[in-house]
Image (tube, rainbow, N blue to C red):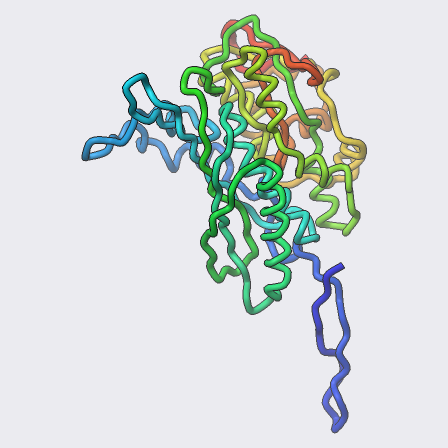
Length: 354
């Protein structure tokens, strides 16, 4: 456990006693991980009208995926005599989701890289994005954050070429990532079609377990390793299965990201709540009240568009749980991933829970 020195006692002619106390990074942020995202409804209002703006000079390539459907990353087809590859670009950063700086760095890097995988791409190079309260936390902790990010990027075969840092009131870390993809085989959130099954490649419950960790200091190693795991193999499996529609499940929860997919694709989605996988301890965390404000805002956003059937409150909260570095939600069946529902023709509700 990393520690910081604090003074204790009074100056009465003697020395001031120095004690070491554990550094809990999650205490230095108002929110944790992707749960600190701006709520989806507020974000959509803020960017309304900003789509469709074109470069004023000749662009370097064709924009294949932009802001229109709120997809995971931008994609531009490079020019070439036979059509070039697509460059995939994204950026993602957040406040500490766990107290250990090394694990936080691993998780944040995996989460940023996931946006490229969610588009069916391969990450090539990343740059660090670091905000650090230099008057509050020692730089040795920042170094551990960067080390964790570097190791996960190396695991992904992605170069890390520097980055940018600022003095911030809260610690924040993430990456801007550039990758490459086949422009004719992109995974997009607007390519869903009726009759296609839905697969989920990581279990839900990361948000409530992270919130419990923030409140109590309990360590959930299985949640850390789930968040730090790359979505590389899931993306490869999706492409190999011929999938063309996918997204990753992060701060807007399963229901939020599925709603965006259904809306962009002009379909509805049916979810079998009994088939959705959950991390050990997730239901207990919901029962004990460790639900973030971000999760509740996710649920509020999808309620008008969802038929929840007989799903109880705990199930609804878990389905809307704000994930950090969650799995891929794929329109298609892929090996090793449970099928949790299907896309159907557009109906009265965009989402139907059974």
